[in-house]
Image (cartoon, rainbow, N blue to C red; front, side, top):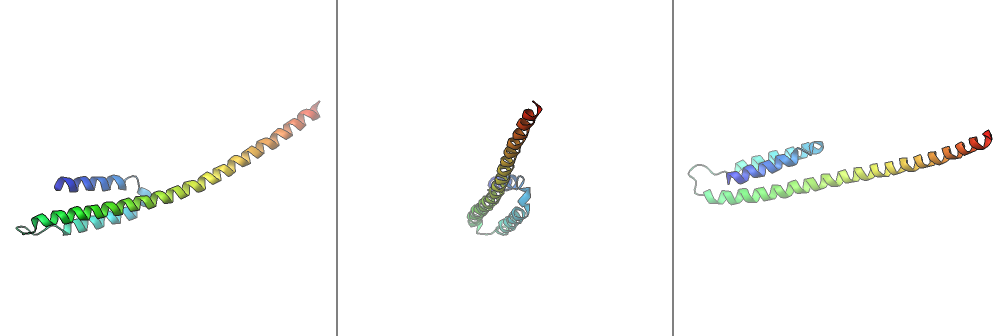
Length: 115
């Protein structure tokens, strides 16, 4: 069980590193998970030794789901921002094409006037 918890914490850490832009939410989620996970540990010599492992697995699944949901929302926000940038770049490209067209007309006029 200890290896599973370490593995899960490594996954949470790996997810948090690329998402530094949105780190507050993931940090809060990770802290909340750690506190909840630690609170499920039974007292020494307790008779619920097997039950707490199931509770921790269920808690891990819950927080995995929350983490994936958070990542999905963050990706949606980034995709929306990228779409805005794409529209702006398209506008700049169209403006550059128009500038090239106008400069070509001016260049042709200068060639005609110079003869």
